[in-house]
Length: 115
Length: 112
Image (cartoon, rainbow over all chains, first blue to last red):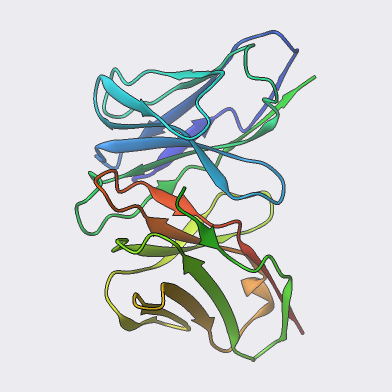
């Protein structure tokens, strides 16, 4: 049963703590992405990776870090430098961008609350 | 900055009617376009993708693309209350990255 899993579903942290969000996919997709969604807002790209051991900053990368050591896994760390970390975080994957069909599929998301 | 514009709504239609959702985009070189449905508190779910001008139908859903006018739309026929959700338009970037830009979404309410 192929898909994308994210854990945990809900995460609560104190301000000043780093936190790592997990994303795993078994769709054999090359590309993986992290988005952030705030209430009433569209999806904003944080980081993306098109191949293992390589990743690129998106529009709002400040205060976040990622790694891509395995094709299946793309964890996101929200650092204490991120000023407003409370949000809904979505992980997605796709075939290599530029290949058709090129469609992103999303995991269930992690809702992070920092107080 | 590539832009994707959607009317935030809410768009309210009666059950059984046709719901028409619209999206305009600024990147003239974009080739791929996507519609996602997002229920409240859930992640986006891909409904349709469209790559060439014209209409593409899948069940009750029809995507329409007009590249000259930089306009893509989604029609939902025989709307059901279960269609009530936010619909996100995504447009692939041209110029090599192919990373899609998402609109803010249109909220659709189908009332019985």
